[in-house]
Amino acid sequence: MISRQLVLISVAAVLALAATACAQPPPVGAGASGHPARRGPAAGDPSTGGSTVEAAARVEAVGSRHPEQYAGIAVSGATLVVYRRPGGDLDAAVRAVVGGVPVVFRDAPHTHQELVALAARIQADAAYWRDHGAPIWSVLPRHDGTGVEVGTPAGDRLKAAVRGRYGDAPIIIVPMNESPVTVPRTTA
Image (cartoon, rainbow, N blue to C red; front, side):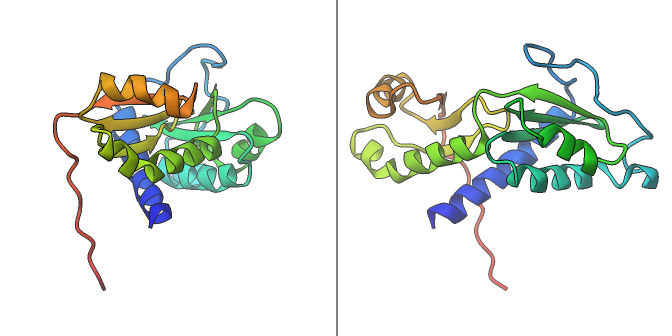
């Protein structure tokens, strides 16, 4: 059950982040090249090897084969922004599957694998937090490798308490005033 919830949360996060990232240019900062590693025809052009969305799916598959490096992906216009720990052969593997879709690489402090494990640990502790007056309403590994977002109405109370339970784990507390909407499952 927890595994299915994490998958659903991760998929929802990728879709939400892709939608919001489309309106923003790729961030430039430490570890950022500032320029797409590859330029080519517009996304969706058959000569590019498919659309940006298709290229992103291929990058996700490559990332799953490089768990020690891959943190996540975002879409910015027609450009893919791949977050990873530098080193290894992930960059070359990504370039090999994106076709003509531009890609920018950004350094990430944590891998997707590390953040999913932390998210699972937090989710497993949900009853503990509820019983201690700090309910957890959402748990989401960030696509940029910076941490795990935890949505709660407890705000600062939970922020102080998580240090005692998880140490210096990269947990980002997101104050929430309302419980998130749950989409009902449909059966076929």
